[in-house]
Image (tube, rainbow, N blue to C red; front, side, top):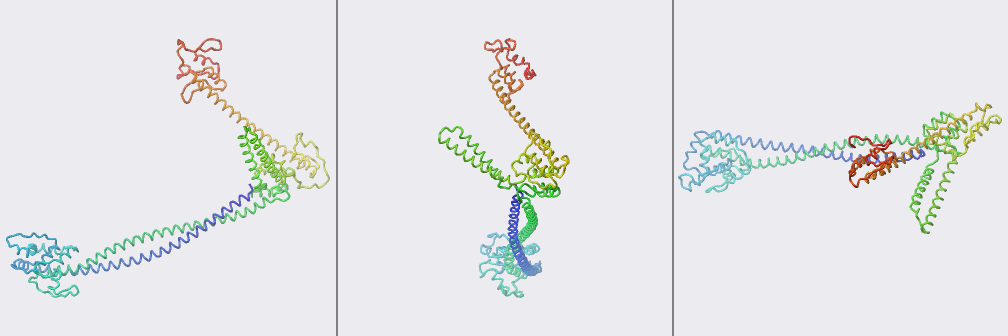
Length: 593
């Protein structure tokens, strides 16, 4: 095919690649810009969440610090109040006030002290009014144990709420309300006065209970802050993961964009090279007066220009349409052959008429296409003929690498245009001996001889360049005929091998069938005709002729079948096989024995 068609297809492919790469690069740029915007937005969100978490931590620290300070102060009061004297004074009280029972009930709820009612010998009503005070009094007797439980108290919101709402008979309101009034304090106004509750221990316990009750909102707020902080930290971690994912994706997109730019640059350079090659190819396929640049350079005999042209892909510009015509001829002919095979047995008049009409249509189409092919070739000069006709036999070996090799050109030269002379004669006409023309000379030899007579500059025919052309042509014809003879011999040998293989396979099949039937005469005949040894073994059953002979009935059997040898003697089947004086005679090995 023409190089310009190949280059044009490659050029279109490269341009499509550049367009596709440009579209991909534009899409990647849009994705990259969107990724950068998302990255900036995530960075801002991460910063805001970090600030929010830091503020919540500060709030928690402030709440914890204030609660610890207050609880530590009231715990210290309890520590200084719990002495042996104070404890003995409280425990020896015979009729404690109801406020003690209320605070004791709250303490039992906070410290998870289980109280069993209706115990002891005291009346039931009296027991019910002092049951919690009795439980706390039993703990107060061991002041170290009591202080240990107060000091290591673990705050629980539910138990604190229950303790703050505890009530006893005879006292209005809850424990929280009573402590607020008795200590002269409210949730909005906390004073530092110390009202007496009849005992220093009970007063310090009242302050401790009040501090616990007052820390309840702080604990709730702290729990809310912990939950909110946990949620914010989860969102922060997710934002950081998204940020790292977007960062990695942007890095990948940048790398892909760089690769696309590099690839686009490479393809652009290839497009530039293809455009240059296409320009060169257009020069190579330019035809003027039947001459292409290749045939003109060969006719002139310029070796340097010819090397450059061959390096740049110079060819005989027959055109892509000629290849299409030839392909159409082959296709139409093959389809016609297939159709004729199908209509070979046509008997009706309509089928015969249909076949004749189809034959005529195919013939006309093939003739018209063949005429187009011949007219195209007749308008072109063949480089090999131009070289020989103009006495440039030295450039003939260089034409082997062209699109029409030398021996192929020997077949095609009658189809091309008659050669034209490039070297005009300087002096008068010189007669050349007809001995240079062989007895079986061809049109090419006659043309070279005529060119030597018309264009030779030498008086001595042996020094004439056309003599070298004649010798080169004769040598080419000899090599061409030798090549054709070798190809024909190889074809005949291959055909002979194919026929021999088919015949051998047929005889092997016949021998297989004869072994199955037990026909030993047919076995020997197939062996001799197919050149097959009598040691032949069936691949399916593993049966050989000798094994099959051994399977025949005994010689004393009335149904035993005898065979006659070349001497006219009656012998067994095994002896009939072993008496063969032939290279196919079976060998009596251990298996056959």
